[in-house]
Amino acid sequence: MHSATNLSSSKTVYPSQDETLCDSFERAEYSIPHGCLAGSCGVCLIEIVEGANHLNTAKTIEKDTLDSFYNRNEKFLGKDIRLACKARFLNTGDVKFTKV
Ligand code: FES
Image (cartoon, rainbow, N blue to C red; front, side):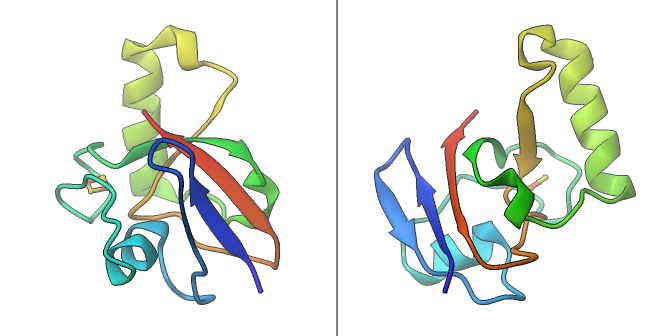
């Protein structure tokens, strides 16, 4: 079993393999702020503090949104920023993140 902890709200959920972090927190009624749920608005940005290796790899739409974010927020360069509406577990482990 894997877990995802939102350090900003101190809430932990146990996502299924095919659920995004957004969906798993929504199911547990601990919603992560979000907008489009399609990877383009950037409202659901999170910083992965621990366990980034347990998540899927960002694909084109997410990469474009992250590139735009990094271009406007250089202080986050080198950090593991993801979109909660696109990040999902790839393998078993624990992930901890904060809301950006
Ligand atoms: S909700 Fe819009 S990018 Fe995630």
